[in-house]
Amino acid sequence: MSGTRASLIHTKGRGLGSFLLLCFVCMLMLSGCTSLRYAGVSRIPTYKIVSSDVPASADGYRIALATDFHLPSLFGERQLRGTVKALKELHPDVIMLGGDYQEGCEYVDMLFSALSECMPRDGMYAVMGNNDYERCTEVIRHSMEQYGIKNLEYAVDTIRPGIVVVGAPYCTHPPLVTPLTEALEDSLFAIFLTHAPDIVEMSSIFPSQVDLALTGHTHGGQITFFYIIAPETGSRYGRRFLYGKNYTSRGVPVITSRGLGTSRMPIRFCAPTDIVVVELHRAKK
Image 1 (cartoon, one colour):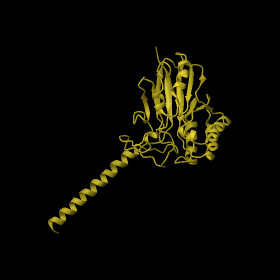
Image 2: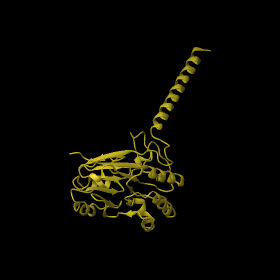
Image 3: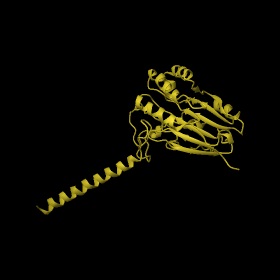
Image 4: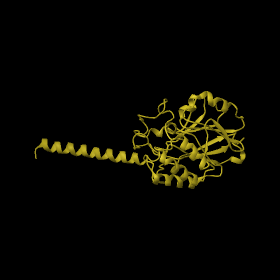
């Protein structure tokens, strides 16, 4: 064998080895982006919020946030059953639903009927997403009412003594939110539930009015390059509120769920689905 040919084979061998090593590294990295704990639910991150506004009787209070189902996209009947199982086993005190429920009116009843099976002690609250105003709006409202899910469209409700929730839909106008939050007593622990994180940043909400905001809409980018690059976030603020716990420019903590379904393309890459759990703890004096 000539030296040139041997050198060429050696070079190809190194190239193949480098390619296989790269594939192995990518598989390891992807394994950190996926999980199979429940069908349809890849992650269940838990965030602890400590505040002096949390009532002593609610220390350890658990909130579950589920959003962006887009039934049936990649989120079909099997994934719906897995989500219901997860919500039941998490034993939350209250469940919050963040909008974008369907990809067709015929799926609305199926979704809310299944979710009603895991109705917690303090009930289930919901807001509407952008998809829900594009179609099936009245069907969704009626189905929520039928299954005892409280739909908050510019409304405030008391979850339990000392804890309130303010709900605003996707098509939110900040001037409509301001009167709701300004009327809240400072001593209350106030949760702002809305579909998109941009709404929290754009509204004139201060930490003295709202203690926590819960949102979805971004899908965690849905398709990302290991969170470093997210071509589409659905947010004018780019990756700032992509997922997890962040803060508005006024200091309000915002927890954004990556959601459960998909839109436009039935693909998720390194943007695992999740149900978010929030634990409230009273600050020690």
